[in-house]
Structure formats: structure tokens, C-alpha cells
Amino acid sequence: MSLHPEVESMLKALDAGFPDVTTVPPPELRDLIRSRRAPLQHLPAMRDVHDITIDGPGGDLALRVYRPESSEDAIPVVVFAHGGGFVFCDLDSHDEFCRSMAEGVGVVVVSVDYRLAPEHRAPAAHEDMYAALEWAAGNITTYGGDPTRIVLAGDSAGGNLAATVALAARDGGGPAVFGQALFYPVIDDDFDTESYRKYGSGYYNTTKAMKWYWEQYAPEGTDDPRLVPTRADSLAGLPAAVVITAELDPPCSAGDDYAQRLADAGVEVRHRRFDGLFHGFLTFPSLSLTEPARQEIWKMMRSLFE
Image (tube, rainbow, N blue to C red; front, side):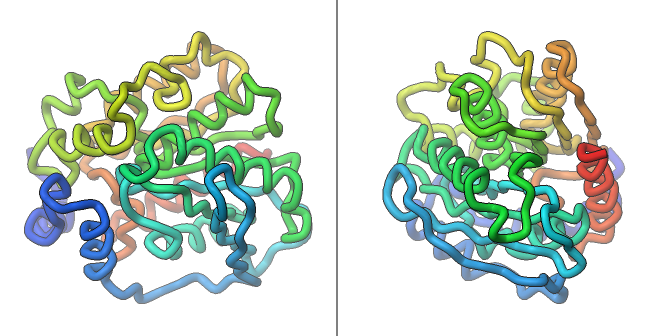
């Protein structure tokens, strides 16, 4: 395969610099990944950013609320769950991404510092994301958001949480969800799809790592729609979806398939697969291909509200 030179260079750098997650105890892994974060050159300015703590199902739950500079009152809201294999990353790891999304889409973003595995196994993270949705529905007007236009979003493992909470809200009579935006989501634990077979090693995210993430998060199995959205009896009646996948990503096939399943169930779907790109590319702003991709995705998300 002929890769874009920047992609090839970045994959080599990630292969050399990113740890084998399966060999490091999770607390040490979090510290190691945090210590290797490169300083960001540009952080979009916000009208205001609030770090708050709410009562979550497992105790205090930290949220970070971003309001963009040009915003009026009652703009749409994105409740966002970060990636990190359910094991690592936090509010700071995705701070630049959330700022860019708030600015680019024109939304209030609520970033959720959900409990991490393996100390907190499934469905702890799912429950925290649901609690954040409930909080936003009841309180977001204070921060200039419109509680009738809430989108659940997440990248990677966070995409799983957004998808499963959309289902839980539908089935449990929870707050109305206006839309869902899933960025290279971890939909399931099927490691025998085409993308796992083709891109399971050598492209940053690996089959070995994905198996380990699921072992940390759901060691007792995944036969539960709170963990794997395709375990639901039906996907009908879910909110409109933006589904983004990356060709070189092992979970790509499952994400593509989920977009098709949603469409087959009558859900309005905007789906885009970015060929030649890898898992996590949206959080690498130094890559020249990232900003054009973000702009396309922000446009897709804005169209949810039209």
C-alpha cells in the first residue's frame, strides 16, 4: 500500500514511541502516556471553559464545559466521551479536540471524565456517560446550551459509549437525544473482520491492544447492549448519526457495518470513511490531513441541526 508520506512518517514515529499497552500496568500506562503528550501549538480560544463536578453513579464525576467565542444563547450541545481503550486518557488529552469541535460546529461541548478500567469495569463508563447526558439535559441552559438539541459523541472507546448511551436513553425513557457522532468507534469485540485481518498490526492501533482493552473493560463478556450496541434487539428509533471511520484502523469494518445497520433500521446516517488514515488521526492536529478532515466532519455535524 502506498501511504501519504506524512502518514507513513507518523505511523513509524508512533510505532517507536507509543508503548505496548499490554505490558504496562494501567496506572503506570496512564502516567507514561500523559508524560509523552507533545505540547500543542494552537488551542482555540473559548468564550468560557468550566471545570465542574457532578454527582455520578460512582461518586464525583468531573466534566469540562466549553462554550465557543461567537456563541449566542441556546446553541446545540455535544456530550463527549474521550477515547483511550476504556483504560486511559482524560479531559486534558482531548482538550484541544473539544475546543476545536466547539468552535467548528458551533456547540457547547461537555467533556466527560468517566471512570476507567480495569479499576472500574463495564458498565461503569457507560453509566457515567449516561449521567452526564442527564446532567446536560437538566442544566446546560446555564452554560448557553439548548437541552432539546443534545448530540452524544465520542472517539474510539468514547464512540462506543456514545452509541450505547443513545440506545439506553431510547430504551429507558431517558433524556431526548438529538443526534450521535461516532468517530472511529469501537463498536464490538469481533476481531475477525476484514479490517482486523488487514490492519491488525503495523498501523498504530493493533489487534493485540484491542483484545487487551476489552479484557480490561469487560472481562465477564459483552453480551449486553450497554457494552456492544449491536447486541440490541433493534436499532430503530435511534437519533440521526454521523459515523466516521478510518481505513487503516482495525475497528473500521465494524464502524462501517454499524453505519449500514443504522441506515437499514431507518436511522438518518451521514457516514464517511477516510481512506489512508489511521485510528485516532483526528487528535493529531500536526498532521496536515487532520484539519481538512475535521472541517468536513464539523460540516456533517452542523447538518444534523439544519
